[in-house]
Length: 201
Image (cartoon, rainbow, N blue to C red; front, side):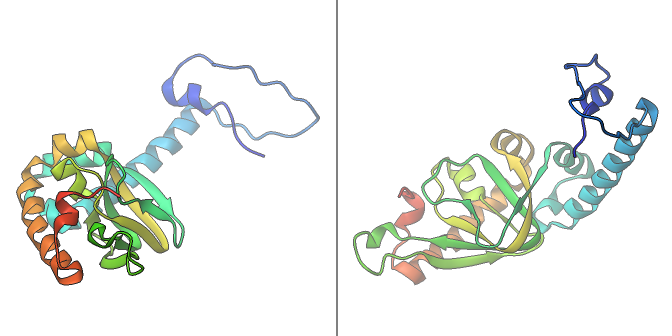
């Protein structure tokens, strides 16, 4: 089971490989026009869905319509299963995440308690639909300050670091202000905010 032959139809190029039957079988086929019409219709539907969702994300409301459209053009989607780690504390940052469905818990292991039995990951926040995470390391140009895990099945919209820097400039001041809130949380939990200024493992 499976499909093949779609690349040449999608990109209007010659066939890149030869397909040979190894046993008797039956195939369903679509002509180029029908295939492209289905793909374009699906892409248009997905694009419209993204447009509506992006407009509902609070931090992106400061962007004008053309800026939001650029985000729709570059954004991707990723799916995670319950308990799956999305980002890991101490890793290099490469993406910014917006929760489209499900819930994500943000966990941190305090460097200030390294070597102690109490140095377990502590939940510091939860993100649900329309909320974002992973921006801190991109704003500060430092390793991930916390880990993120899926709670149930999760779907995230993902933007790579290059697109983040190019398109989310107008939102940067809001994200920088949020750092103060994160620091206050860390002081309350760990007695120090040094984990943000020096977030390695």
